[in-house]
Image (cartoon, rainbow, N blue to C red; front, side, top):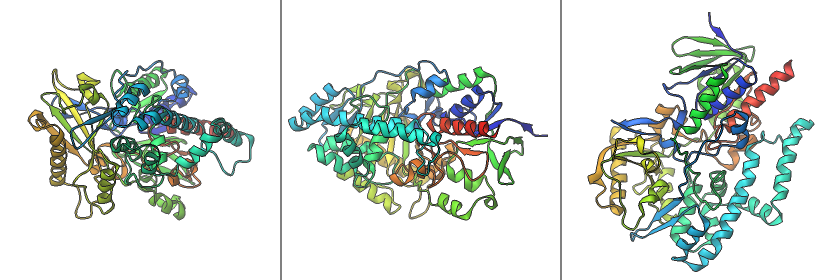
Length: 528
């Protein structure tokens, strides 16, 4: 006999933990299923060498909306006070550091260009204000263009008021910036190549498109939601560990006492009858009954792998098949005997992001290779040193360096990812680091290269896409995951999508899971 629950949540990353906790707080008996042995999803640290652990997908912790933190009683989760931001290393060995602090960044830029330094405070203020509008948009259910009832119209009214509050100039700037290329945006403001490259690097994260592509201005703003005022890259990390936020969620879920957690529970299929979800079947044959299921897996896995297509309209299936994933991010993880050094680069810069692409043109050329299924010979490489923030991830007096690599496409023109191609990528990246840090190779104890295919296998990410579907203007809001199904409901009654493939997308910690659980509870109340 299968066990019965009020709701089942698939996936125990931050979205799944958020959804399960909210449902349990509302009185439901919840089953939380996790394919891996540890909870936390992408924030869970993995041992890649004896004694060396890292969660490379959690380098940018994301933004935790206050409504979720307060609504689930998570308490204060302390962030580190690092101010490194992003540093761009030039071909000539010079470094341009762009910290979060506006004043310090302005002084660093002044050494290159007085004109750019004068513009920097105005530019960062504008980015912060425009990203602030997205904060409002990301905390509300997606606006329904067919809304007629007052309940459906209220979120749209709130978003409209926030938009009007931007003022005439910034309203125009928002509408102008969203479809722009990040290259054009940087060119509009600045003349220093390294500064423009540092800005552009944020606009192409996890995107198989170069900085010349339209809509990368939106991607830049998306990744700045919740970032410190003055930042052009990233949110401050959690002080305790990469998994501090997911650990707080797990504690909250267990504290309520209505969440049954099963790790190592890989879903094989969803049980459907009469166009309504009936429960979940695991790969080991176990079955669990529930008339409500929230999947935090990506849309491809949810709809194309777990559901018999007989239950889905062919047009819907076709739309899901056409979602662009195109994973193109790889990682090379280094276990180091000694801390890395780059001449002219302060050690504290490694607490942030160190970019080895000093010109926007170089990033665009790297993207060109990926367009044709090739691994760029000169990829866009960003370095960070997790042990600068969390020294206990490595043995005493040892270090970890993470190289984030774009563009290494999931689909290769000739063959597929294998050990030889991973090793070739590791050699390319190690060589690039060695050109700015001559003694780097002698410090390496161990290295491990993870391709997009490895990310697919480790984390269940379709095509290795961390984003669950590229963040592009035609794949957001009511078009995420596909047009007409942006409100977390699905064509299967009782099945909801609450992962990063749903509104508001990746980087908003628990945002999709929170909104999916809210929608489930609203529908449940309407039936009673």
